[in-house]
Image (cartoon, rainbow, N blue to C red):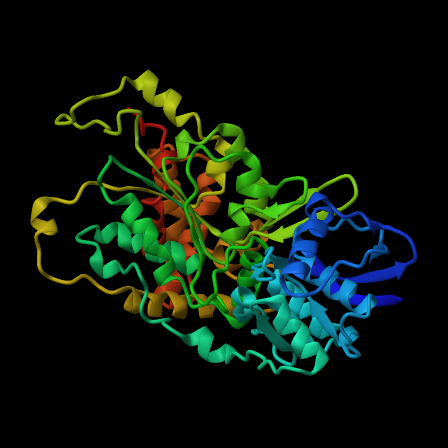
Length: 511
C-alpha cells in the first residue's frame, strides 16, 4: 500500500514542502531514498523502538520511503514523526483519511515522546501558503508556529496523541495566539535601563544619536569605565520593532533553534559573541548553512567587546555584510541568504594595558605597543563605524549619587521621533530607512551646508588632521543630530557636535 505524508525542509529562512511517500510490499528491508542525511537514516531505530513501546509494530515487509523532491538534501531528525505516521498508515495499523491535509514534524524519543525541532515558524508560514489545514509539531515549538493565523497548529507531547486525533478517537485543541497582544507585551519594561547608569551624560548622548540614526559606534576607554554596561542598554532605546521586523527576527531565531517556548520576539536582539569566535560562527555557514551571530543580531545590536582581541580575518569577513545588510553563503549545490541588518557596537581599551596616558595607571604601554594594538583593526572596518567616543571612568561623587538618571523609555521617545522623520525622508527609497544607510548622493542632497558650517568643518579637518573618510561620516551624524532637534537643515552647532565623535581619525590621537 502506498501512502503520502507531508513534512517540510528549511533552507535559509524559507521552507520547502517535502512529500514523504511510503510503500509497503512483499519482501524484507528498509529503504530510505531522496538524499537523507545520517540523522534521517538512523530514524529507523528510533521509529522501531517508539512503535514497540506504544503497542504497534514495525512491519516485517519491504518498506520503501521516498522523500520528494529527491534531488534536495534533507537533514535533521525532525522527520521521525512524518515517517512513523506514514509507516503506520501504509501498513494498515491505523486509518487516517485526512492525512494529506496536515504537515507533520517532530523528533521521536524511544518511548514515543516528541523533542523540539528547528524552523517551526517558516514551516508554518509555508504550510499556510500551500493551503494545508493544520500542522502537528512538538509542544515546545507550538507558540512560534501559532503566530501564523489561518492554520490549525497542534502541539503534541507524544505519538499516541497524533494517532488518536487522526483516527478520530481523541480531540486536540489548536493553539491560538493573539499576535498583537504578544507583540506589545512588556515593551515599556526593558531588562537593562539607562536609569541604572550613573554619570556618563556625554556617552549617553552619543548612544542616543547612534540609535536615532542607526549608526555603528565604537567606545574607547580603560577597564571599568562602563563600556559594556552602556552597550547592553542600547537596545532599550532603539525604536520598537515593527510587526514585520519582529516576524523576520523570530524566523531567524526559529531556524537556529534558539526560541525556547517563545512566541513572537518583540524585543530587539542583543548578541555579544566571545572574541575567540570563528568566521563561520560569526557570519554563518557550515555544511548545512546555519545563521551566524550577525544574522541573530538582525534588527538589533551586535556587540563586539575588546575589538582588537578578535582575529583579524574574523573582523574582515564582517565588512561586506555591514555594507549589504545581508550575508550570502554559497555551497556547491545551493546558496542561502540570511538578512543581517544590525547596529554594530564595539568597545576597546586604548592600549594593551588598558590605560591611556594616565599618570596614575598601574601600568603603561609604549607608543609602539599601542600602535601595533590599534593596527589590528583595519581601516576599511573603521570606515564603516560612524561614531568613535572616548569613555572615561565615573568619579566617586557621581557613583554615590542617589538621583535617578533619565530612563530608557524617555530617551526612546526622542529616538523614535527622529526615526519617523527619517522614514518620511527616505519613503521613496527601497533600501534606505535611516541616516546611516545614506550614500554619497543622498548626503549631498540631505546634508547641504551653509557657509558658516562649511568653514567650521574645513577648519576642524585641517586643525585636527581628520582623514578624508571622516568627512561623510561627520555629515551623516550631523544630519541625525539635526533630526533629534527636529531641524530641517544641518547648521554649525550640529557639525560642531558631530566633529567630536571622530576620535580615531585624528592624527595625533596616540601622541
